[in-house]
Image (tube, rainbow, N blue to C red; front, side):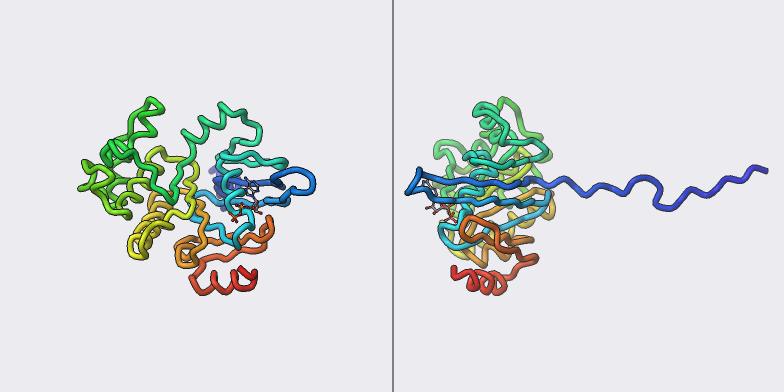
Length: 258
Ligand code: ADP
């Protein structure tokens, strides 16, 4: 009788951790020349995990917007590398960066930036229409359902509340299944109830739809919806909080003198 050795437990290589959504390696950036030179980012290295919701916080002028703009390919770093979804974006030319932003990044700004003459559905589908593709109808239903927009699709922006308009902007950002959604004070124009709804939806988008989200905010309550807060000061990273609460964020910012 032939006997076979039982296969070793845990056969095969350990599963690799998921690749980060975006990573910065030793990124520096300054503005102006000589005497008036300002260092906005000083040798920043940071990694943002895929499927996670991260907030970037810090005092005014600490480099949050500059970091977000460099990570999103809206601005170029002076030195260092940025890798988004496996692509080194610091190597791309302007044309390649434009198509990367269109195809692989979603944006949610403070101003909703919806086209006033288009319905909610047309606004949500606009980036795909511009790229000459159509929406996967199942994904469209998932996104619109998750964001509670099913009965608002035929409305034009002026027929929607601020919170609903921002939900349309979030749906537009999610529909292309981008590697990362970047939010720049996405609830800055909303009252606290609508802002809370939009933040809860961003959180659900990461938990239920696996979306990676990076948001710049001044608001400790907004940051408390994130999985992680990255703290900046004077153009550098100075700490992070996991599972933040408004209180833990306030206390960390207080220590920075924000
Ligand atoms: P934050 O978003 O944290 O407020 P920023 O990234 O906007 O910080 O700015 C970081 C630093 O870079 C600040 O000192 C700011 O004044 C400077 N800065 C940002 N953008 C420019 C610009 N376009 N020209 C000159 N200086 C700038």
